[in-house]
Length: 60
Image (tube, rainbow, N blue to C red; front, side):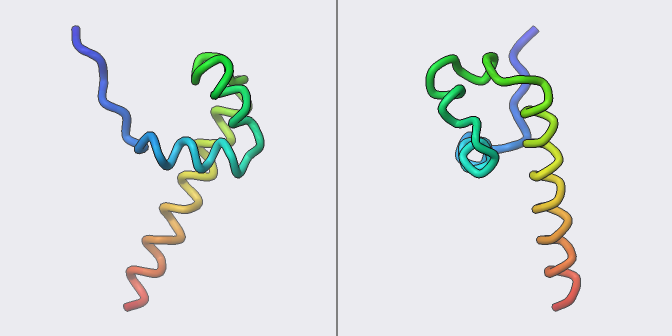
């Protein structure tokens, strides 16, 4: 079975990791080195950004 393609772009994940303060772990250990809580917070933040973007789009 092939690898699943991620929904979030690599750039977005890096930006979120920097914003949430665990990018240094990603640089040193890769994405597998982050805590489950950090991954959850990253997904939560990505959803918040997507909802905000969608709300702004619907106001036009």
